[in-house]
Amino acid sequence: MENREMKKGYSVWRKISRKIFPVSVWALLCLWTVAFLFMLFWGILTSVKSDVEFYLNPTWFPSSASGWAFNNYILAFQNIKISVTATKTVGFFGLLGNSLLYACGNAFFSVLTASIASYILAKYKYIRWVNALWPIVLITNYMPLSVSMAANIKLLNDLGLYDSLLGNYLWSCGAFGSVFLMYYASWKGLSWGYAEAAFIDGAGHCRTMVQIMFPMTRTIFGVLFLMQFITLWNDYMTPLIYLPSYPNLSYGAWMFQYSTNYEVADVTRKMAGLLIIALPVFVLFMCFKEKLMGSLTIGGLKG
Amino acid sequence: MFCICALAFMLVQWVVFYVYGNINNILLAFQRFDAQTGSQVFYDAPNMFKNFTDFFSDLFSGQNLTSYFLNGVIMHLVTLVALPVSIMFSFIIYKKLPLKGLFKVVLYLPTIISSMVVALFFRYFVEYGLAGMWRTLFGADLPTLIMDPYNAFPTMLVYCFFTSVPGSLLLNLGTMSRIPDDLVEVGQIEGFSLWQEFIHLTVPMMFPILQVYCLGIFTGFFTQQGPLFAIYGNGAGIKAPEGTITFGYYMTLQVIGDNGGGDNRFMYGYTTAANLTIGLVSIPIIWGTKKLFDRFDPEAEF
Image (cartoon, rainbow over all chains, first blue to last red; front, side, top):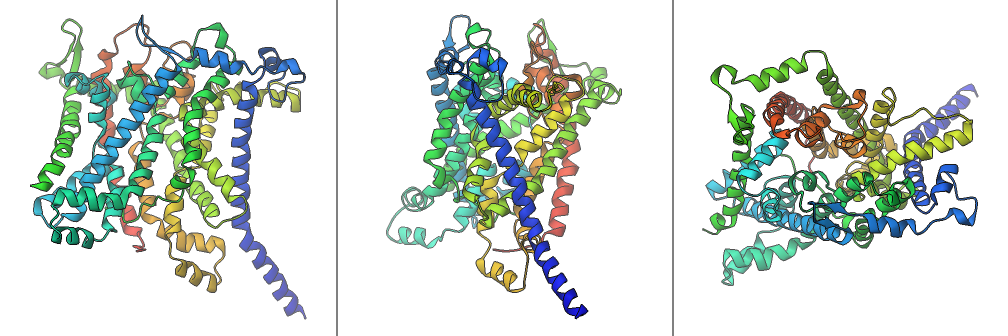
């Protein structure tokens, strides 16, 4: 009898103990989600409050209809601008254009160069000198040699590429970084038989790469492009340091905080401005959510 | 011929921006700014290592730079602590527990929204939203969390943990989804709990990606800037409390910060020497980490 009770007790304890890990992590995840969503909700709520209402009641909903101020968005939109020189000011659409040029160009060229380099290294490794290029990949990815910010500024100035979009494309389209590793994994998984069939049909190496092999990895190209695009879209340090004449929206968000214009000096309008700046990439994310989520792995990455 | 043509541009780019960039970096560490010519010139032979000696004397003087250095390391350790939590969160989503769709989108949001916007949201929320809630609930004022010299650094650590937790959700989920179903089923037949599945199946399968994460974390171990530039700016107007400043933020301010009209180029040599020293110190740490991972790698193929 006692033995049966003990067994039953052990079984119950075993059942409970099996649940401790998932339940506790799930609860922690819920807590994080609630905290993040609450912060976001607070920001959105603040952005549509009047100044007076905000200072009287900074946390909850306005107590009266006069407490709402949707025109915060109009005022914020009008004041998102950066003075590049004494005479030139870049407004919201200029910042948006710069963001697009900076993020699209850099993302496209960096994924393109990485895709070509990884294709050659994955499929032509029987050529001795091609195989000998592997140390470049290892050094680029695993040696913590980082050129200092000051040295980069000097280098770009010496090459006449400082504050130039084209120079920035050239600088950041390095082929052997992390994008290379991700693309390399997908080339490795793709059969060389397709290329061999193309060669038999008379296609050259270039045509085979462009017309046969590349179309088969267009999904991974798209996903890597989107990931790079989002990272670059949110990058504010590079435009701030190396492209002062091409401020982007993220840089704009930072500058907007220091705007001395009285119209946007209040927290409510600053929050509205931040939300306007965050909107384009959020819309993009919602459009490509399914594509982005679930397409990416980093298999076969071991160097 | 095809391979040469296809790789020519990439190799030239690598030589110019990586090889020449690093050579230029080393040279700059032995140079100083000459205001008359407006260029960087080499120190005389007796003072060749002046930038390095200056850096070491600042670092070991027990004054500001030492604490900046320690702050950066602590901030980075918080990121390291967040890594297992981030993997566990991904695991919960991968196992399709309730609300997984919501978690997936919300965890990915900090990656989508600019870190600048998230940092500023956090700053205003802590300064006004949290303070307002505290007043409503407890009837007292919340201590200043962003500008107070004692509270600012812990607040930045909370921010680092909070924003590091989502981690690389997509990569984690992508890698987890590649774990063969057969293996998971075998685990279930053996009576694995989710914890056992996580420890004995998921983590070993994710070893290569964990290695990449850890190498990434250790690469920036000493130069972590955190959210300081976003929250406290470039030193003009609002100043970050002294106890919050990290080595990375300090170095950034030296190169691009507002220094009251002074020429930042005077600090190029010094910051480059510091960067080079830190890079050299990092090499054994990175390779040690890699060796450690290689040694304990379960070598799971899937």
